[in-house]
Every structure is written in C-alpha cells, then in structure tokens.
Image (cartoon, rainbow, N blue to C red):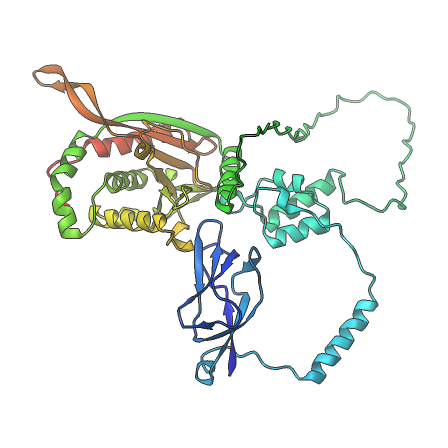
Length: 458
C-alpha cells in the first residue's frame, strides 16, 4: 500500500489559493480516479477537486472554511502498490528519528521566551485578505479598520503583500509605529532657544489629509423584518464594487443605436442557424462582435491600470456578465474574441452562459478579461451605469431593444417610421480615458451595429 498526496491543483492565471467549502468524501470512503473529493471556492467561482487515483481516503488535513494554497497537500489517499509507482510516496519516519527531532525541538522552544500576540478578529471585515496579509497585519499591529482603508493593487482590488508592507513603512515614517510596552519611557527633546532672525518665507509642503472614517448609518430592525446573512459570493461582489468606485473616476457616455437591420437578419436566419450549428442565435454575440472590432480600432480602451503605469493588452478578451444559480452575477471571459466569427462567438457566449447557470464554470473561465459587456436589457432596462470591472478601464451596458417612432431620411424627404432602437451605456475610467476616447469608442460600436449587412451570411 502507498499514500497519494491529494494537492490543491492550479486553477488558472493569478489564482493562488482557494477556500474549502465542502468535503464530499469522509475518512474511510473509497474513491475512484477522477471522482470529486471536495468542493472549493476561489474569488470568482466554485469548483471541485477530483482524485487522480483510486483508493481510500485516510486523512483530511484541512476543514471547511480553511484557506489552502495552490500545490498544498489537503488529504491523503491510500492506494495499492500499482498506483504507487505513479504517485508520490510519503516515507515512514523511523521512531528514533522522531524522538530525536522532538527532543531537539523542545529544547529550542524552552530557550526562547514566548511572544503572545493579541489575535485580530478579521471576520468583522467584508473584504478578503490572504493568510500572508493577515499574518503581517497581526505582527505589525495593523487593525482591521486600517486594513480596510488600504487601496489594494492586486486583482479585484485585493491587498497584496507589497501593499501592506508599504502601508506599514508609511505609517512608521509618519510617526505612527506599533504599540510599545508601557515601561518604555518616551523622551521628548527640549527645543533649543535661538535668537530670531529674518529668513525667507518657508515653503509649505501639503500633507495628505487624514482619512476620516464615516460612521455607519444605524439600521433599525422591526419585529416582522427578516435578517438574511450575505453569502460568500455576495460579500466578495460587495467588496469589489466599492473598491472599483473608490479606485476609478467613473464617467458615462450614452448613445442610441438603430438596430433594425440586426433584428430583421436574426429573425430571418435564427431557425436555420440553430438547425445547422446546434446553437441558439441571440443578440449578444452580434453585439460582442461589434465591440471586439471597436477595441481593435481603439486599442487604448483595451488597457489596464497598475499604479501609475498603463498596460496595453495584446489580446482582446471580452468579459460577459452572466447569472449564477443563486442569482448573483459573474463575468466569464471570451478569449481572443476578435478572432471569432459570428458562429464562434455564438458558441462561446452560449457555452459560458449555460455553464454559469449550472454552476459549472472553472476558475480559468473568469480570468484574463480586458473589457466587459453587460446586457441590462435582459431585465427590461433601457440603459444603465455599470461599474468597471477592475483592473479594466471600461464596461459597456446593452439596453433593451424597443420599437420606437423615428425620423427616416430618404432622397425623397424625411418621414416618420417604426424602428428598432437601443441605448449603449459606456462607463470608463476618467483617470486614463478622456471623453473624446470614451465617446469615440462607443460611437464606433454604434456605427458597426447600424452598418450591419441585412444580407450577410453567417
């Protein structure tokens, strides 16, 4: 018999850890190869971890709600000898070696005076902090309130190791250090008295304003009210939205688009399209195609911001807001969207949308987005003002398509007719995107949609 180490697998770009949400197997259960053993959750999606071997689960190293790093062993599965040849083996340690190591460890521990740190309660914050950040905060005496005030530079505004170390260094340089023992005397130097002399007016160096924490508005609860605890995903979304508003200077541009030709074309080909391709043809892939073309025309909309640096993205990866089974929203990503034709775009949109509804998205499906599109028209909204998906700099909301009376220009003169129209709402980051670029981009999307060829093939 041999022991196989079940490790947390790599789950996509920039995903370094996950939270265990549920164990599907218990110690002593028999597990088949490729069978799911536990469920995990990352910042974006929930997923399952499957076993690579057949055997018996003998030991569980982490419990529900524990945070595990990628590559870390989370359980042991006992396999037969045949499976051991392909699996890492945990060598048995001789009892005498264990005794010697234990004796040495005890001696070393007795020689060092224990340092007791007051444990910080991070559960009072809605933000997610990695174990490393929590440890640094604990050691440096950073309170939860101070952690919440740090503008994270990581993905989705998360506080990184560099962010908290920079905060600690800044706090020390401003004269705010960790708490010191009461017995340590504080010496205040006596200022030297000197004769006054005439000098030039001193330069005034502006100091950053102190951050004022606004008190939370009290919420009264009546007898008939129901109190519902936010789930993990809702807490994450809440943190991301607030962080995005605090990070980016949001500006909106709106434009009305005549999509009559698109509506006619889709109505004409949707039955044949589904019969030939096995996919439903919605309006979303048509809109995505136009957005991808416009991003190629305006590459400075396909960027990210990293501090005072602008990262110009090579690939055009379109995020599309989709609904999860619990009603929350998620943003899976269509990779290299500019390389897809209308058939490829429809298949990508339908695949990601269906897997989002059934909770089957993988962590990598939500990574690498460079621009996001959300369809608020699905809920009947005419237009909206969406919040930017950090660290991107723009997001486009698609409004509902409506029949409206409109002025139609012809060589014979103008007349009133019924047209299919919709609004495009473009939110962009005014730190790096000025009104000319933000407005020109959404206008180019509108131009592509209005110039849609009613007689095109798919």
